[in-house]
Image 1 (cartoon, rainbow, N blue to C red):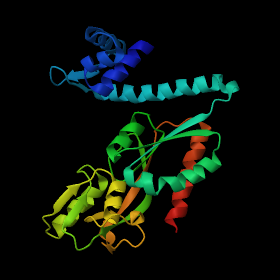
Image 2 (image 1 turned 60 degrees about the vertical axis):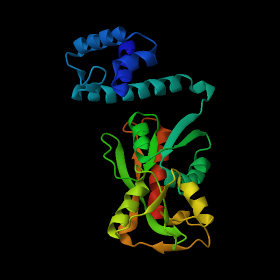
Image 3 (image 1 turned 45 degrees about the vertical axis):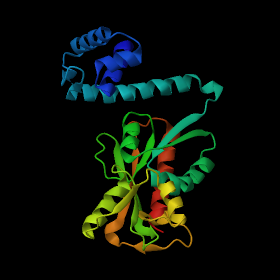
Length: 275
């Protein structure tokens, strides 16, 4: 049964039996056969063919996928308890979007590392959609995003407020802009439309790089106020350019230390929100 579950998980994530077979180093007919066997066991349809290669999961498949992720977590927790005599450290993976990773996460981590010295923390930085996907697929325990995405079974909470400003050479015609999928670009595009600006654009796919370019006097950009360097000119944009960061947590947390980490994160947000 575990073999069927593993094959199903790969098929669900790839939406493609051929890719699933390649990733599992088995044949495509073997994947199809195993999925047919699982459908017979559950008495339901798990995938609907959209094209010759692409498959669309059914509602039943999504329920099964979510439960399997939780089952996988239970199995990992069981192995941890069995190996507890060896004092294996607890692992906590945190995934965060660009601005939060650079300007907010270090402050939060200083508290977490001090409070949980026995925990092995792993941090990664992605765009908001990728962060959500990491938490959704249980590759990360917690996430921080800067876009109000629909998160499905993943718990989403308002976390901190971030103010956006125009910074850099305010007289320049050159705008340094993030890529279209960036959370900041949503506000940049809004500003261009509001001010009827046809911008001369330079696309920069990293916030830190934008800040360094601004420090060299190259162009201007809409960035978080916390990222504005000392002596860098900036212009406030008002309440319409204040955005929220959101805290995501995996829908199935069982380890008591991870639950403690969640509580510390939420207390941090309350304290910072009251400043």
